[in-house]
Image (cartoon, rainbow, N blue to C red):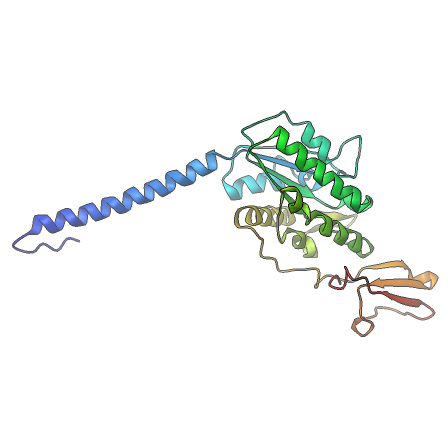
Amino acid sequence: NILALANFPTLIAEKIIDYDLNNINNRIDETNERIDEINDKKILFIGDSYLVTGNGTDGIIDRFKTISGETNVIYSIYGGTGFDYTVDNKNFVTLLNDVPNDNDITDIIVIGGYNDQYSDQSNVLTAINTFCTNAKVKFPNAQVYIGMVGFTLEANKRYPIYQVYQTYSKCNQYGAIYLNGVECIMHDTSLFVGNNDLTHPNANGRYSLAMGIYQAWKQGAYSFNYSFHSIPFAYSGDASSGNLTLHGFISNNITWIGSQNNCTIQFDNRPSYPDVY
């Protein structure tokens, strides 16, 4: 509404119209900047079966594209692989090398972690170094991002997976950026397929992973509801044989399910593992 004063209505009207036009132009400029930002991106995903599952329909990459608005997205993925852990002569380094050199790629997002529990972690760190070195040569304008998302419903594998997280999170020394918080997404055990599959995310899990990866990539961190503090304990050994090691536990914090009769318990107070339950 324009309030016209008797002596200079035209002047007031012009000022209000100019103000409105300036606001509209500013919003147009902001929108164009956002469009340019999206159009300038070319993203390469590297990963394991977490990215393979549902790919092309409701997979993590599909959900990421929908959430982010990014459309120029390519991938090189293979189930069972890790930075060092190799299946069919493939790992994250070879998956990267399989992609043709491209100066237009701006972001390389590596998602995995579960399979590298089966490798020596010093070898995994060396492979991360090799990966980042190769990426700089093949894709000189790209920033590498690494996220450790692997988890499982099998409690005895959680400590090795935690070690993988520790390794992946050291990637900054090679110029990569770790996707903070994504390691905790799958600690919500409702996000697993379940039944005979204790490792892979279901449809809700894939959406949660895509959202977390996007937030960590775009905002620097993902705000998670679950942490290593809130998951069930990790153990090794066999209680039925009378020997069980509980990793990172204080004895008075143990809740027993079933009988511990005739079972020798030892507590493994590893300095690197006191926060993993």
